[in-house]
Image (cartoon, rainbow, N blue to C red; front, top):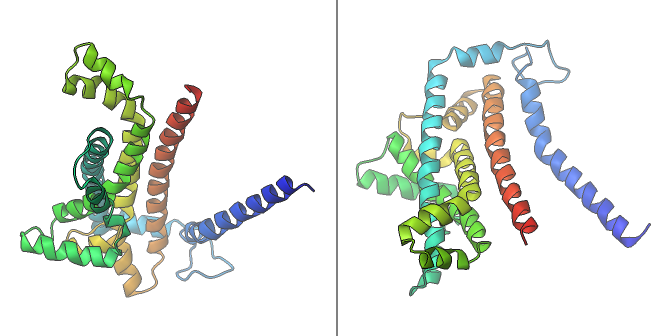
Length: 267
């Protein structure tokens, strides 16, 4: 066996191990959501959709689902807009203390969620916004905007700087160039950012738990159920959350890989 084949074998084994390590608990959660027994035991009981029927008939869970959809939808729009503005300002302009500016912009995801949640709670309470859906949206926008900024900035790195100059030379204003050149070029990255930030917002529970008040989201509902007792409804709810999040992440990945491949083919 050659050295390259050996390294490839090790890499494949590593990827397989990581895949199993990550997705085995999720797979068991999905399986147990169809188990007739209340406790997650092996061997399994009979096949049942009892827990799905319960969550569909639970008005509190429905309201939490609506809250999660509203929060993640608005958050992804705000975060992507902020991320685009930040990425473009970094790409186009040079100004004093730019390094500090970028460090502060990218800081929120590096802060422990509990610390960030307490800080957001203190600030939102100070301005009278705590305990509302807008509280969660505001906090999630701060958390997710750096992800959007990173994706869009990566796309801008691949753009030929002469495209803007050509538009200006043809008489296009800055706004016309933004509308006809920059935004179309960044469209795949913008769509990826929308999907990724929506997924992060939809899954987040720590900040939501601190600032939501009575406006609970699905992850907060899951946390409260788990704190109370062992309830198989958690597996059923978790299955919906997982498939929602994985759909958004895969969509973002498809757009990301598509424009990456197009960028390489155009070189």
